[in-house]
Image (cartoon, rainbow, N blue to C red; front, side, top):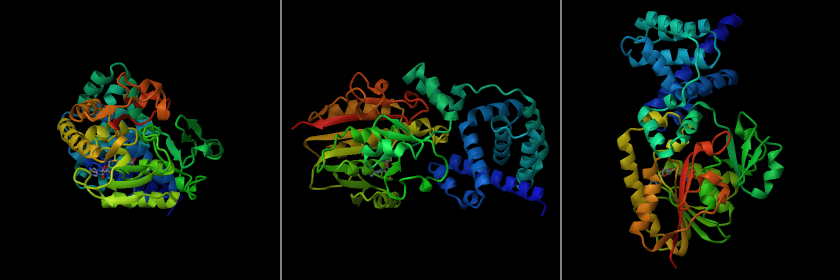
Length: 429
Ligand SMILES: C[S@@+](CC[C@H](N)C(=O)[O-])C[C@H]1O[C@@H](n2cnc3c(N)ncnc32)[C@H](O)[C@@H]1O
């Protein structure tokens, strides 16, 4: 086989893996993570794997503008596999500097392998060629997210909504949390990292994290800078008993254990708890693991510190999961808010008198954040909101609300951070 034919084959395999990746992501929640660990991607050589991953993610990040451009050129909606191939082809031309002839011919080769797409090769060819000739304008941030989500963010965050939505298009950096925050200076240099408030480190190295300094000896774990803030609000004193009620995969459990707490880490998902165990083993930290439904779990103990990082719409994690913004349906918010209310009421029962409860969600939606905190205080007069102080736990100053809760927006940090809501309550002694 000539080198050229080999190259083309690699190109095909990488594009097919990219197609499967974004199809998996858009098919269901959790699909992206599964797609990223799929053998289709891992069977590729490193260069092709990187291309496939970037291409699949580019389609997800630019889904709105891609579909808009395609809809403007299509007289009627094409079958799903044809639309997906068009998305794949156009993303290469528009956002990845792939020459049009290469993107079009690779897309047609893929269409040839799919019996449902094969009859549409003429259409695919014509639409991609026509669109490749169009001048590329910058995408308007509001088109990067579903229209109903844009309307919500606009109403909740006003002018800031544009800066938030613009981050959908950008690949996020990797942040880590250190087991011993005193090591921040020492680890920053080998990891080519910037030290962020908290501290978290924003790592400059790329590629396989298991080769980065400090991974094998468990000196740190990957955790977005925003995700590391809520657990710090518990202000753990070594020896205190802490309960992490929705613990997996364990980033916040590790923080509590590293701060010296005796931790009970509970989650309903046995498979996700495996990740908590692995993370504890690698970092040499300890926690009691409980597989249970937090809404039903009964235990005779009470805890000095309780963390409820509740299941949520996860709209704040769109930088790594842009598909979330397309999978979510308006009705989902009421369902998840109802579950959060039940979990918060259950969490309250585990807090010792004088103890703290931190509630947080990686969501940008007020019904999962501000409304939950207000509702909780009304239902539980034995709890008081303990306001966060400016910059506490590494929180951006702009995230502190008038009530003393944290509304962390992705645009609050240069380079972005996850969106989070966090509130701290104290149980009257
Ligand atoms: C936002 S994630 C938690 C992330 C985790 N705190 C961390 O920092 O790594 C939410 C978790 O809640 C768990 N969960 C959902 N419903 C639950 C329930 N009723 N009881 C216990 N855990 C639940 C999910 O399995 C998931 O692991």
